[in-house]
Length: 378
Ligand code: MRU
Image (tube, rainbow, N blue to C red; front, side, top):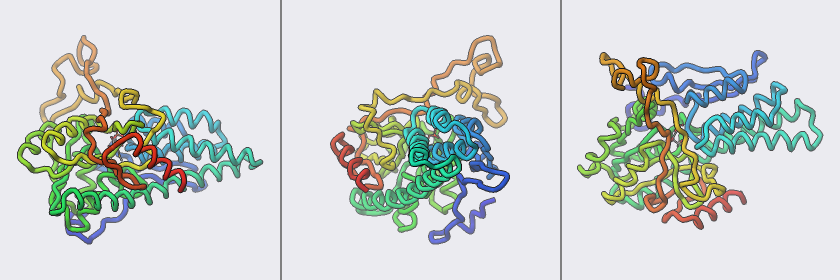
């Protein structure tokens, strides 16, 4: 249990979350996850001892969020290598477990490449598996460093755009330590603002249908003592109209070469609201989320998820949300629902993209290409 009182003031840091770890013990190897489907009521670990178990954890969102999916993909390939399995097949399965977050394929392919490079140099299976694990660990560490840099750049940007301080920030989905090797992307900026005393309020969209905001961001905000309130996604409009939002901060699952941003469904309506109300709309993501091979927003594959996530939503004491007969398995008609996991915000609605390599604003394809070139020289 988290002791809220102990965490409620600035300067008192809660213990770091163990979101994903490698278990190399004799009973292992395994990738051990904090099961995000059970948060916030239970902090339970999920042990993935093989690649199919990890793929299942990815599909069910026990492990989720773009940067963490990249890390999970990397360790998954290292797991296959340690078990002496087909590494190329493992990388393919992991990369294809969910389609939108580019980091997943990036992490899996990067560790596969490290394994293959070791094999090419004459390493035996054991040594190649060690090389794969070392690469997964490097990826994990790099994400923590990137997260800290994004937090710093993001805070500088906020100070520039909103010089008065006392920021009231609106965020969507979950972008904190639960999705990262460090403290996250957009949430890490809000956390940095809180530590620096410039955060007045964090508005947390509940993020239907799986409630990543109400369950996970609220959990992280409470652990860290941030001033926050949860709102239904549909309440955001009236919050903007009341002048209660100074900036929107979100993460990204894939940023196309033209600067279009795929993120949790509900992000695009926030960008439209932000434009109308002249509020900065800021995307915070590591360079590994930029995909120069995807030319534009229309080319991004948006994951469509099960209708039951919408129709089987339950209200305390009132049963499921869908009309009788519409929910999966309860009637004669098949369940119907429109359930895209993500939407795409065009670059002209994005004020700035904050990465570990710096900030681009305005958002242009040329700016993104330069950022990626800079990153690959490091
Ligand atoms: O479906 P999820 O929970 O994996 O979606 C996560 C998001 O959309 C996050 O906002 C995104 O991955 C950015 S996290 C840095």
